[in-house]
Length: 264
Ligand SMILES: Nc1ncnc2c1ncn2[C@@H]1O[C@H](COP(=O)(O)OP(=O)(O)OP(=O)(O)O)[C@@H](O)[C@H]1O
Image (cartoon, rainbow, N blue to C red):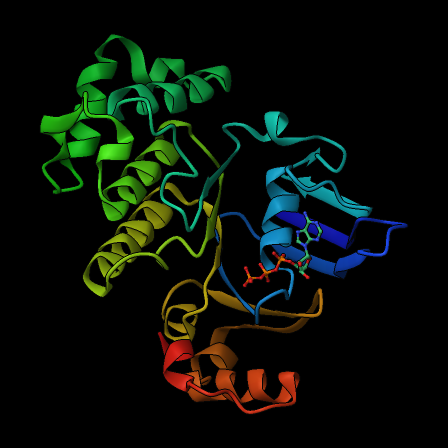
């Protein structure tokens, strides 16, 4: 379970550039639940993921992952526990290392968390199998540098890395935004498979209203650093993409030029 209690984040405190990015966010996510996160530019979505990943320390409030209070702990303390896939496919892995070396790094994080026995001596074989399962033919390119892969191939390997690290929490920050529609669909299906097989507690930030409603169990909308919509179950099932767009319009107090961009 994840819990954010009354989280406030102020950047550049006491400077002319001071910005309150989160203003009292309360969110509890059950283990294995998949939450989609939407909101306009600057709403605080990435900051919220940063607070969970530990690269943004909350100015006020409490962050719990499982029974651990991680409020004042940084990224290193979350390594392995929290996996993150970014919009920039190179951000979540090391471009100058091979596919296999990146997988080994992720596995090492898993080993630190006591998952060594699960890998054992057949680790190379296991890496190859996991990569072959993707169906992208990358098992024949295990020694290729990550920065030689296409964006979609890198995102797929990043998702495999999350499984090897034995992460309990998966944070996805617009991870399909830079991909063509076919590859975006492939990555979303892979995401769905990994999340349900491993029962990962997942937060996915997206600008696609279609993705926000089609995937996961619950949708949260941020605006001005606050949660302004939190829907699950039947009330979410009854929501249409058009309803979400209407909410965006109302909050921005202006018309959107291109609804197609939001439908996604
Ligand atoms: N490191 C930082 N220093 C100062 N201000 C920041 C920093 N990071 C974010 N902000 C500000 O905090 C607010 C929230 O930013 P955040 O990146 O969380 O928004 P977002 O909802 O993810 O937006 P987008 O959809 O554009 O990615 C914005 O006004 C942003 O300019």
